[in-house]
Image (cartoon, rainbow, N blue to C red; front, top):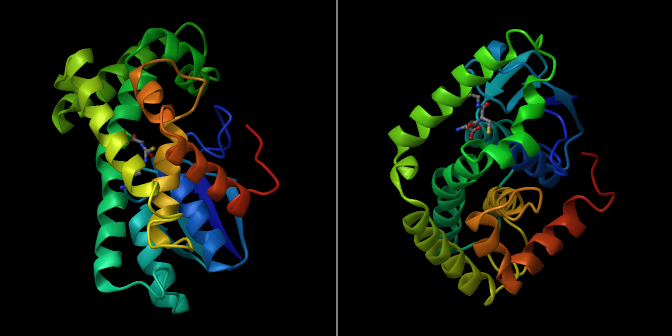
Length: 236
Ligand SMILES: N[C@@H](CCC(=O)N[C@@H](CS)C(=O)NCC(=O)O)C(=O)O
């Protein structure tokens, strides 16, 4: 059976990582038997999760996992879509992963209240004496990553304007059709759903969630995907 390595449910989400949620939804879409286990990113080939393990073969990265499932099991996650629909879906997928993702990281990690509500739980197992040192080190790393990617350079006003335009454009698109490829979910819905579910999480305060939650079409899309892929709900 395929084993998906994630972080484990947290923040009221199936996983704190949108990319683990994406891989989980792709596996659900595939219809293949799988289980989700707690992984260790220090042992992961790229130092990140998700990773899947299939009969001893390890595949890291949510997009490489998709390619692996397509190649090994002959699955077409975008079956029935025209080339233009496939292209649009892919563009929305990467908008989620390479743009919204960083807004979410900024919101969760760079705001002290949000950090206390969320990511701080990852450090609970570290002895109290050395915890502040480790937390400080990781926070500096996250800040460097945000600065390198670029989102970390925006002021709050600038970030809000960008977030507003991003969520408005997604909302306008989702107001015209149920899923990225039309009336049935395609591979990229796994990703966009994961990004939007993470961005709209009410555990965290700030403009990212506020701008995302404004849109009825985004909230309805999340509910459609939840009903379809998590009818049993999820712990966390
Ligand atoms: N491109 C990767 C990104 C995965 C990723 O960024 N995972 C994060 C959690 S959301 C991680 O494991 N970060 C650990 C680190 O950067 O040290 C994918 O699509 O799977």
